[in-house]
Length: 537
Image 1 (cartoon, rainbow, N blue to C red):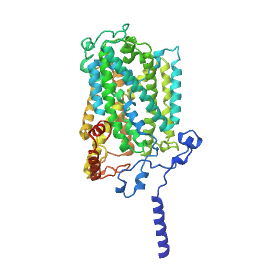
Image 2 (cartoon, one colour):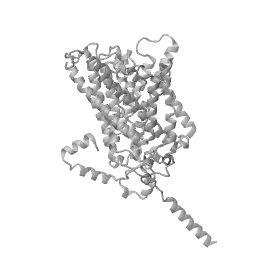
Image 3 (cartoon, rainbow, N blue to C red):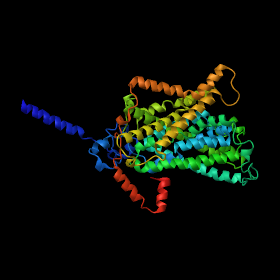
Image 4 (cartoon, one colour):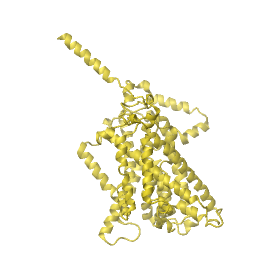
């Protein structure tokens, strides 16, 4: 009996030891076409994680293999240039090119700047475009089909397809905005073509007549949500970090790129728009799609031929980019929910080309809703879809700020020092508290505008209710989802001492090691230190 027990014990130890060994998946052993997602083999389930992310301070880890195994099933295909351009130009789209026109009409140039600056500090949509060219070029259904097919094709190439598309489309959008800034400055100074509206110096005349504010305080409140739409997608940088080999090196540069996008791209271009176009310009609210874009209106008024069509083509590419970003973010989020038990396990499937196929297909299945735009009731359908998702960006940012506050609290309670962190948020926990307060004020302001909308007050109670829910429907929907989640899982937020800070952690450097690393970097020449402060870590 003793010998049998000893044998069983030895067998158990052997099995335990074998169980600790993790088999990692090496995609490099697959063919190039499989890695690109173009073979039947590529659609098969990936046998395991690649363990492809760098672990800093690995000498301080007892079980490195376990840490490497605690990685997402998605492969690390993104390069630093992809992440940088997603941060700098990824969310530049119709919110800036088109949505800024309606925002200028509602809030005036000063109201637009106030909203964009405040939302931008906290961060440190669109249904029409192609109608600018008219139905003669191609019916709207044809454009929708083309966009859908292109999105599907790019999605076949997975992470790499999305990253390359975002890189090159961001380059184009940056080029257009920078070009517009230079043209706008010339036009403001009176250097436009003699046949156009900007052949004489106009300076700040639009701020005097019709003025800086369109509807006073209420107009500023109405513009905040438009500003949030324009900045939507900034959080994609954090989502994409899991698909980069070394987030510790690439994330700081990407995050700081957000500051430059806010400062140079949004604030500067919106300032120029406010100097060139008055908020009472009828085309801002009377036009459809790109025809209501202040960028297009400015170039047409300046008498610069052809550039309005170039801007419209850029808007179309921006719409395509937004669609791909939605597929990317939606599919990855759904996969993460499945991995944590909040969605069916089928959505945790990731193939050998690093595509979460069921999640991607589930998101793409909603694309035919775009064809609603063809019928007369299409605008109403999209108004309600917008109402569902309208405030979702604000809720996303609110939860990110709250998570950071809770992380900092748990980090301190569990005996850690902020010196251990490879990257510190600029404002620390105080910056996140500022974000929470500002988002709460924006939600209150949106409630104010929903109850007392701009313009004449609706007479019927049904019209009042319609206006309210179009502006605030996302709030009860979010509350409903939270209630369902609680009823399903019966879990409450954990106490700070019980929060798991180690799962998925890839930096295990001690405070002494981090401070030594920082001291070494302080020895660099002054111009290198300035560059690092502005653009890297």
